Image 1 (cartoon, rainbow, N blue to C red):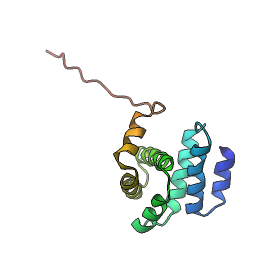
Image 2: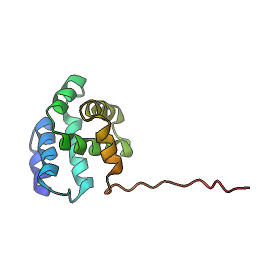
Image 3: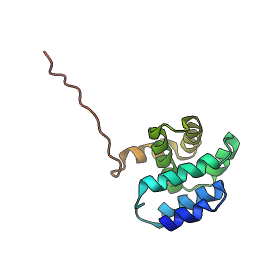
Length: 123
């Protein structure tokens, strides 16, 4: 994975993104998801922030790549950096992958969610 990220850093942002999105298709698991997501987020921040450019990139993606990019977008939104641009990507990914790409991310057993239960037994 480190070699994929190092190679992607030497490419133009759009090509780097496509290279990084190929990695999940070639590997069963992304070993260091935080590092991979960081590289993907860096690549998409370099892509022109015009909706037509974003749509152009997303339209060329296969379903597993849409899911992988949706995962990276949610990681970025969780961190709170560049949310406006990430929401543009989210919209384009949703248009391409539908609600399924969101559900697959939410149901992925590699992602741990912590939900605080409310105590309804208060008298």
